[in-house]
Image (cartoon, rainbow, N blue to C red; front, side, top):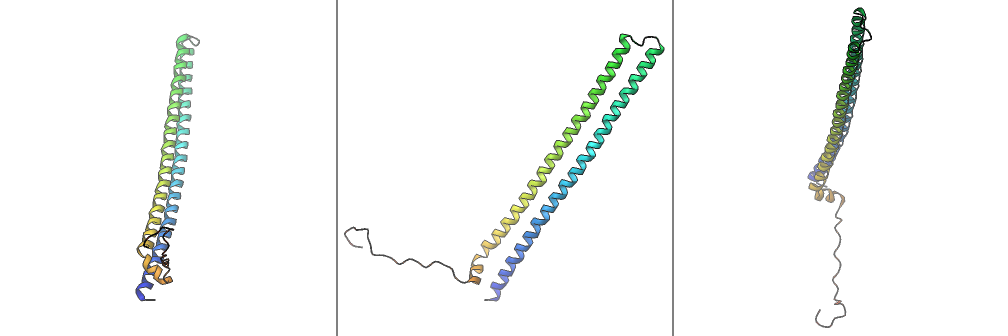
Length: 168
């Protein structure tokens, strides 16, 4: 076995090992990206929860202010006071709905980021596999030479002409 064949085989093996390490690192990278996305999602959920609590608290304060003011003026059960409280309640509902909608949008964005990270990992694995195949293909003659010739032997030609008369 010549030195060039040995170097070629060694190069192919090193290439395969490198591609395997690359694929493993890309899997770890994708997993780390997904963990970061999960942490961001949790942070968004906490922030949204605080915003909902804040909206409810502000609505309670405003309702209390309306009740106190209308009670002090002697119009506590009036339609104006009740309408004001209803308006505050409606605004609170709209604010909480908005916070929920923003939270859902953030969750969707996180989901798409996770999908993108997964697809990037798959693409990298495909590239590594392609590189491996290319390396094997470009060194096929050298690899075959290492293991000896395995070319098929040609079949002997027959003079049989299928039962037809005439020259063969």
